[in-house]
Length: 256
Image (tube, helix red, strand yellow):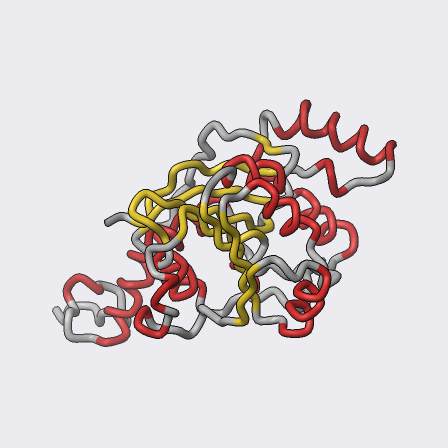
């Protein structure tokens, strides 16, 4: 009796030379690598800028992305009052000119770390700083891995990088998708990060994560009623489900 004809790809383990079957096997293996990543116990930071300033007191700091949304960043000025030394770096020349005009005694530099090699950094920047601040910056760059590596090159031996990014899985994002069937995104953002993907990015940059928390900033809400409900939301919902907070706050350091 003639054996029944095997269907194409029916026995991929017995068909090692079949390209189609091998592709199917690889796809199946990739699927098996998808797993749930439990959210560890995290703090909810209520004032993102105050937390950065606290970690920068009395230290040599480089604030990358120092130009604010309105080209006059008061946060950078507050940071300068607490640091031993502060360098502001940005690629917005118009904003830097305005900040130099308003605060002429502060140090600024026009420089793009994203597409640079280590030997292209200014020599006096290498191993110069205790803290590199990347506040709401990483989501704007296309080559985030190279960007973070170049920032790491600027740190002293025990220095740390402080990164804040919008949370891809924030409640606000879900609400907009569910109710308006639309993504609420800034046009200058190239990527969004989650609890897991920001860890993967930093590990790829050979960085050790010191702290990973979420922030739900009450200082950005000027309306008293809105602030009250946001505080209530933080104390009742976010303490149990921090992963739906508006942003992620990370402290990391390069592994030497």
